Image 1 (cartoon, rainbow, N blue to C red):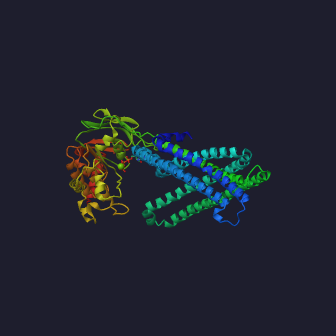
Image 2: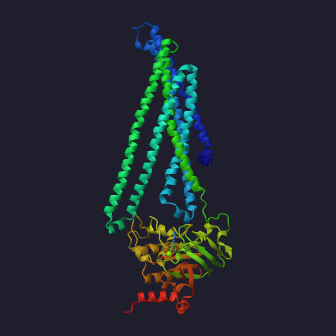
Image 3: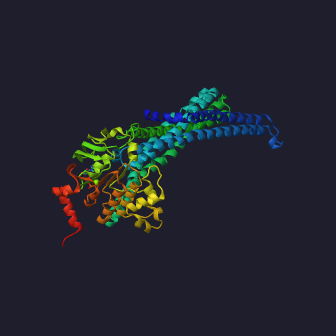
Length: 593
Ligand SMILES: Nc1ncnc2c1ncn2[C@@H]1O[C@H](COP(=O)(O)OP(=O)(O)OP(=O)(O)O)[C@@H](O)[C@H]1O
Ligand SMILES: [Mg+2]
């Protein structure tokens, strides 16, 4: 339960409305408790009047019994309306607060998601992260709103009604209270059963949803491998399981209301029977019987909802625990109040070693090199040799386990991460485009949103995209993604280069981002890129060696280590790995028959 203490900050933020809401709960209860007393007095008075008067032939409305009933009826109506008005206000205050807190909490969680580094995203499943912001926040809201509201309501209803009952007749009060614990306990039992079965269904449902999601994502592969039947079969299997679990829930659910009504009916019966006995003895009036039946029914709903409310709080505590755990996850590479990133001289890797969480072999081992300001560095090597890993460390998407990355001699960690990201442009190996227009996808590269149409077009033309865009129905405004056009692999890659080009950065990093483009186009784009960035610092990773002609120096990687380094010419002259890749690729592009 102490997990829920974390929510106190939010309660404090809206304490004003919360206090007003609770005040309304109290007032509505106090007003409400007058109703049974009015019923009692009205009934007794009307009975009394009808007994003493014998004006059978008078106009019926002027009959004193009718008048008494009418007068009390109006009072009852007024009291009920007042109670209703305060209940309305109570909801307005408390439930509205819960919606505000829900909004704040979702924003806090989303902000935190944005700060966490990549290793967090590798450790956690998308479904779980979605659940944090959706389901878990929803459960917490049920605690802040309904649970708090019903709990205070239960407490005050009990206090006010039981007090009133004792003042009227303590003896009868005990009889009325007697069946309530049983009612509460049996409802609690049934609702925990319902809850546990609902939880099982939720898990099964998320399994089913994930399965369907994966099917849609991989529909091309499924169809081209002719695997539809297998998938149908698996879906059918999961669906059957889901249905079975739902039927089990339906069974318990259908027990719930009959059970509740039987218990309520029995309790009413007890009050009527014992009240009748008391009335026969003369210690109770008929009005008292009606009054106590009403009290009983005022208590029944809180008693019934006690189990339900407890379950809500338990659920919220479990959800808040997960939210707390997540909000306490510190981003590894975050650095807020440190100086802004500025590159004056060089970036250097010193004995950098890095392994991914679940792998035994280091992806990078003892890497040493220096990148001078204004230099274009080429990186090549076989697939899996650690090129992307190196670039991701440089971009601070991961932190190295040993060794140090330095900027002008100072540790990498000493710089403000946000300013660093603003001053670098990184084109990752796997392209991601948003389901927005082409222009918006390019503008995304500019964090300040200052680029104009001319700059967007220039970037697109440097990335070799202009001809492609001209062929699209709406040019730069063409929508991409599910509701728009689908780009080819090479078009996507060039678009993500244009995105980097609109950014006014100090350091540009291209990670093999033209692999899906033919060799001649890649050459042309890389040339335009180098031309555009004259004087800027850049790293170009490529498994094709020809485009590396624009670089000042090349590092060749193998199994996480730098095995060769130097200018293109010197590497070719060395006759090592680079020279052999170079020869092989030259042969492929100009095959000799
Ligand atoms: N997220 C990850 N988790 C675990 N291991 C990884 C991860 N990413 C890469 N690796 C491993 O690290 C090694 C280096 O991978 P990296 O992606 O850096 O290679 P690369 O040189 O960029 O290859 P390519 O030319 O195919 O892009 C590989 O053995 C790879 O299997
Ligand atoms: Mg790579």
